[in-house]
Image 1: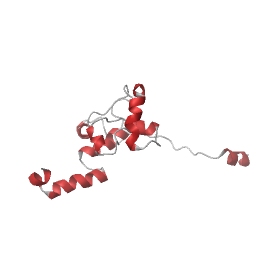
Image 2: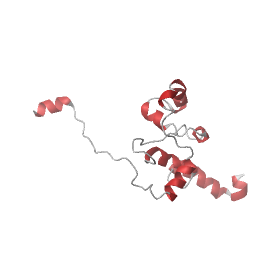
Image 3: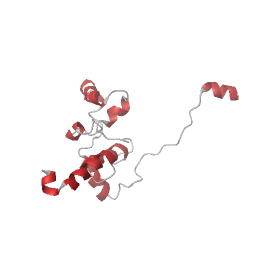
Length: 132
């Protein structure tokens, strides 16, 4: 339907935008939802539990992925089934497209609305003891 109504270039734009994730594309909203602080500084990331997860290898289950990075994308929903009490009260992104629109039109959301941490150098304790 998309190709019929808008041509092959519209379809290619959507396909390539999915991979590059930096364009005005509904799926690109996952980057904003996952890495920008929208409402509360206590919550650095927001998960999305909507249907686009079926097309994006469950990239929207971001909080669960960060809690259990070794669990494959295909099993992240199982974690939500087993332990919903840890995730049901966390803030959620209802729409990746909505995240893009909010980023564009909400003056309080800027490219600087990301959590910045100081870089910590982790050294081996044996190296520290040798230096002393």
